[in-house]
Amino acid sequence: MFENLFADVRYALRWLRRSPGFTLIAIASLAIGIGFNTTLFTLVDALLFRPLPVERPDELVDVFTTGGDGDTYATTSYPDFLDFKSQNQVFSDMLAYSPSINAVKLTDRSRLAMGEVVTGNYFQLFGVKPRIGRTLVPADDQPGAPRVAVISYRAWNREHTFTMRCHNGRMRPSRSSRAHAATPARCSTRCAAS
Image (cartoon, rainbow, N blue to C red; front, top):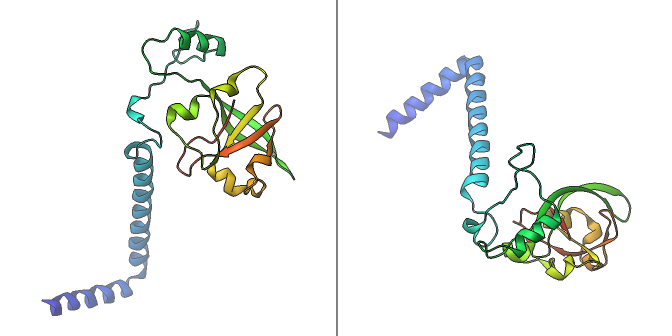
């Protein structure tokens, strides 16, 4: 049985050596197909199969308002959110968030950082614990409270500015803020400021 297999393999190798053009096209086709399928599986796995890195992801809902122009996913003002939250009888808790792009001043340079402006209960509601420091708390929402920022684990590792000195690192989204924590490695939140 193995003799026949070895004979077939030797014959196939001789044939491939005699036609290098076909061999290159076959190998390139296989490489492209394997690469595409690997990429597609990685995306599908990350987006569909893995649960969100938060507690109870099956209980989360996103609530939107309808704009006057018929926009079904309109933004909500913070005062309207406070009204919704005070009159809420359906959900265990509510939070607000808004994507933002901020100029972050590091010690030797500035850079743009994608993030979210969020309410103080954001991390508590998602059940995300910081790797170091503390996350936002509802007291951070109070008028006059110092502005606080939470940076991602990726930013923590990328920027040597924050290495083990997070409590002293300064970030400046629009006004002065302090970096108080770094999120866990699998947390999808990039940057949050209250």
